[in-house]
Length: 134
Image (cartoon, rainbow, N blue to C red; front, side, top):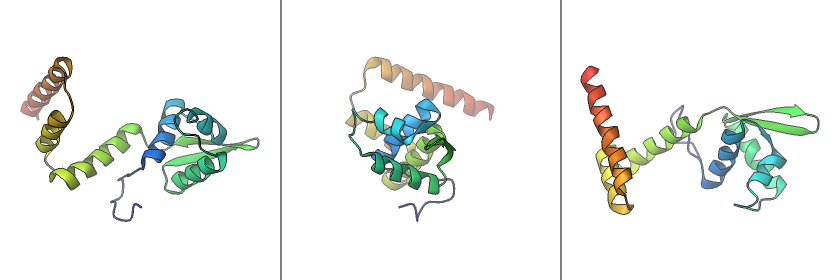
């Protein structure tokens, strides 16, 4: 899945992201706890969750430790790191690396209310001011 990724780049499926969100929120959780946390969203078998967690661990995204009979997993990458990597790939692949093209698409494709637009304008202003001091 990640054969064409550079070191430090992470690409996760929707299901893998769901598991990671549980671990980011809790800091550490057992397979049973992850399965239970996802029960309303996805009714996954315990073995499926165990397999997914093991694969994420093999990829270096999680670590595990044994406590009694349970394995407890914790994330080794932050949500921000994963977001940065995945959005960066999206930006490069779909928008030729142009942030303005991505923002334009988001503004056209999604309804943006006045409050959200004001927040975006404030972020752009802040970034512009920071650029003057670099």
